[in-house]
Structures are given as structure tokens and as C-alpha cells.
Amino acid sequence: MYLGLDLGTSSVKAMLIDDDQKVVSVGHAALTVQRPHPGWSEQAPGDWLRATDEAIAALKASHPKELSAVKGIGLSGHMHGATLIDNKDRVLRPCILWNDTRSHAEAAVLDADPRFRALTGNIVFPGFTAPKLAWVKNNEPETFAKVAKVLLPKDYLRLWLTGEYLSDMSDSAGTSWLDTGKRAWSTELLEATGLTVEQMPGLVEGTDRAGTLRAELATKWGLGSDVVVAGGAGDNAASACGMGTVKEGQAFVSLGTSGVLFAANASYLPKPESAVHAFCHALPDTWHQMGVILSATDALNWHSTVTGKSAGELTGELGDALMAPTGVTFLPYLSGERTPHNDATIRGAFIGLGHESDRAVLTQAVLEGVTFAIRDSLEALKSAGTKIDRVTAIGGGSRSRYWLSSIATALDMPVDIPADGDFGAAFGAARLGLIAATGANPLSVCTAPETAETVEPVAELTGAYEAAYGRYRALYPAIRSLGS
Image 1 (cartoon, rainbow, N blue to C red):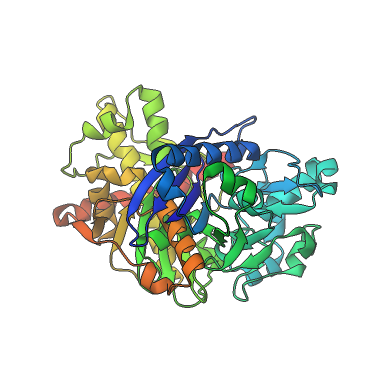
Image 2: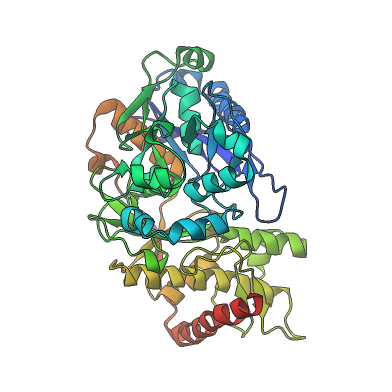
């Protein structure tokens, strides 16, 4: 048996798989996000430990025998979070999360230093880790002075699980401190934020052995001895391992809290000015590119809160048959945007409202707004040299057939729906645990699921969608100028 632990923004998921990669059981435990000020987003790292304990306790309650057979554990987690600990491993402040934009001024300063884009292959986004440390240095100097280690969220979990200070390449590539081409920490970039390599975890590949489960936890959860913990991956790279998106030309679109268009690359292809992320993959000698939008299902959830209707009720009002855009446009920039704008201060908008704009029209506009933001990511990936001709859909939003039809039509490419099963980050993490524990060939483990169905573009609506996308593209500079 192998265990995948995925530390998400809203929950911890523990997935148990067997030697044949069949999912045996899944445990969950909820997490909350604290937003003490506008643009801030934080979590208490201690809550991650509690939630992990609860999720594994659920597995123990339902499948104690299977849990006792675990030989490897893989880790996945939300990226970029700044978890600061002192020289006694005590947490110094709440973790500043990936969707926190308080450090936009510090990010702009670091991004103006040409070494950052040259070495990392990426813009220094406000959500990345380095500007967060610059913000702490500027605003909480007493805390900064006590920082012994900076850990990404899943790697704080690893410290608790194993006692090791280690991180993998895919997660570390989102810090703005990694020389992404060389897969090594950059002393130059660390020095630029007042830090040293000694304050960073050691680096491993996602498939490497990266510690052994502490005996105390093994006993508590009913596991055996010498349980290997893999290097693991950032959540999107872990999802790619779960989806088998590990070879050149393979791609997926993820409709989760944020939205991601992810493409695997056999070589390192940075183009920072496009706001495309060029990161190391979880597998050795492999990289990936992704366009990231900050509000995907988050936009629909916001609309749900405002209207008092569930997301399922809202999308249900539209049915499954795709409709032409109505002329109402939604910009999903509820907490700023990454690809392609790199704008932490922009905010969302409805444009083109009329007396006839009822709830269903607004819902349709919200889905289309996210769809067009994903199209923006596709155009950015194209400009960075990546060619894809189909995508596989994952994430909670992929349950909406209407949304998938919208995406297929806007991207003008087929969208594959995987066969029933959970192929996300927890499954990818479990696969990495299997590889680390057994030494199996990563490419033979990280295979793609069977396709249950393919959603094709609606040919008669591609023209209307192209016109609507043109309107969408014209609106960002218009509303940006209003806020300047």
C-alpha cells in the first residue's frame, strides 16, 4: 500500500492506493483560510498537522489492515506558502499563502532585478515566496531575524512526519530562489532577500526518498517501520503525475479554486514576460509550463454566495447545451490575476449588464469569464513555444458539462474527461510514494487514465466565442486604466 497526502487550501486529503494503483480509501479533514486584511490570506501550520492526523485517522478507522501495509508516502501541497520556523522548529507566524497579494510592492522591486527572471525563468509574482520574505523583513523585522528555515507548506508537513528539512524541485521552483535550469538554489537570489542557502531545505527530486516516517507517528497510525517519504511535488505537478501528464505535448486544464493550464515539457522553456510559469516537474530531467488564473471555481463560489444558490443549482439552470455569449462579460479578477497580466491590484467586473440580465445570464458570464482567462493562458503558452492540441479536464469545476463545452469551444480543441476515478494531486502524491519506495520507473507508473468521453468544440459557436473573447481581451486595459 502507498499513501498520498495532499495539503490543499480547503482540506487535507489522504489517499490509500495498492500495488496496482487502485484507490482503496480516502480520508478528508477540512481547513479554513484567515483573511485579516484585504489581499491577505493565511493559515496556521498547526492546523495542517491536525487535519493530516484526522484524515489518516479516518483511513485507520475504515481500513486499518491496509494502512498497516503502507511502504511509501508521497506529499503534495499548495505552492509558494511562506512557513517560517525558528531554530527550535517553532512556527514564527501564520503561513502566508499562495493567493496572498500583500507583497506586490516587494515583488515589483525583486522583479526589476534582472537576475530573478534570468535565473528562475519566471516573473516574481506577489504570490511567490521570495517577495513574502521581503515583506516580512520590511514589516515584521523581529520575526525575520528569527527565521532559521523557510519551508513550503507540504515540507512543513514533511518536517513533522520525518524530522527532515527537504523540498522537491517542482515546489521549490515557485519560490523565486531556484535556478530552474540547474535545479539548484541560487545564492545570488537568496542574498537579494537577505537569506542564505542554510535557511533553505535540502533539494531532492519528487521521486527520491526524502525521509522516513517517525516511529511515534507510525505507531499512532498503525503503520510499520521504515516507511519511506518521497520528495513529493507542488500540487499542480502532483496532479500532473496523477494524470500522467509527464511527456512533451501532454496537457490538462484544472478547474479548482484557481485555474491552471498545465503542459509537460522535455526541456526548460522559460518566457517570463508572458507570465507563464516555467517550473521543474516532479520527475527528474523534466519541466513544465503553466498558465495560472487566481479565481476559477472561486469565481463561481463567489457568485453562489452573492445569489444564495449553490454552484450546482447555478450551473444546472444553464443545462448542458452550450449557448452563444449574451454580450455580458465577467472579468474573474477577484483577487488579482497572474497569467498573462501579473496584476495583484486589478479586480473583477461585470460589463454589459441590462434590465434583461437575469441570474442565469450572470452565471453564464462567470463561466465564460473563467473560460476566457484560460484562453489567455493558452495564448501565453503558445508564445512560450508550447504546442498542445487537446487537454484533459480535472478539478471540481470539470463536473459541469456546460463549462467543459465552453472551454473546448474557446480553446478550439477537444477536452477529454477521464474515466471515473480520482487522478488529482493526492493520487499523484501516492504514485510518487510508490516510486520512492519501490524504485519503479516513473514513466511506467505515471500513466494517463482512460478517457471516458471527449467534449468537442461547438463549431457553430466558435465565431461567437471568438468575438466574445475579443471583447474580453479589450476590457482589461480599460478597467486597468480606471484604477491607475
